[in-house]
Image 1 (cartoon, rainbow, N blue to C red):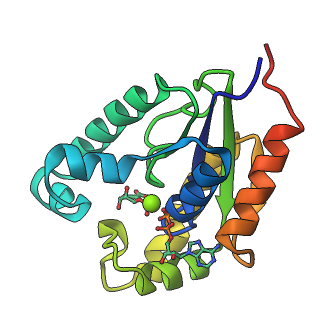
Image 2: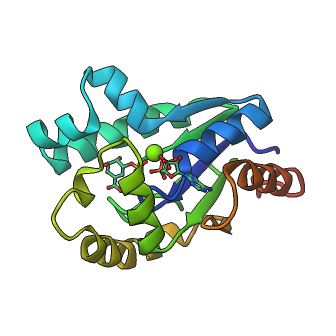
Length: 176
Ligand SMILES: Nc1ncnc2c1ncn2[C@@H]1O[C@H](COP(=O)(O)OP(=O)(O)O)[C@@H](O)[C@H]1O
Ligand SMILES: O=C(O)C1=C[C@@H](OP(=O)(O)O)[C@@H](O)[C@H](O)C1
Ligand SMILES: [Mg+2]
């Protein structure tokens, strides 16, 4: 059996969308960024969905979009950082031919990157994003940890990380 898809997990602003795009280019696979998919399906931004429907409703839409994406082959699937932590065992439940990667960053780096990025992350939009990010990261790390490959994503460029992921995929096989 060969790897049929990749799922990238990690905290908000860890670089999933950017690295996912670089990896998809490198593999010649399709990128399915779940936030982008939801924005296209809903015709409004993630921020607007959170504001109008609340986080629980967003999680429902997100879960459905990820399920749809997992039906595809030769895709790089990039859920938002909350997907893996929104229910127990999400990474364990992925199809066996899915290569999973955790992009690790500190809360400090995530907040700095989120601040510099044009995408609004409603969960970090409060008055003290650093305190929120530290608490949320600590809560979520156990959910990201079952990913097969853990990569320190703070110091390396997106292309470097994509090359690393592609090479680890080449040198390993899914359990059959
Ligand atoms: N490896 C990296 N090094 C430096 N900056 C990065 C890296 N990866 C992503 N970024 C920047 O950090 C911000 C968040 O990246 P993004 O890919 O949207 O993360 P995520 O999808 O995990 O929220 C963007 O402005 C992006 O350009
Ligand atoms: O971690 C989260 O709960 C979220 C992460 C965001 O995506 P990124 O991880 O791409 O920033 C987006 O789905 C939404 O703002 C909620
Ligand atoms: Mg993203």
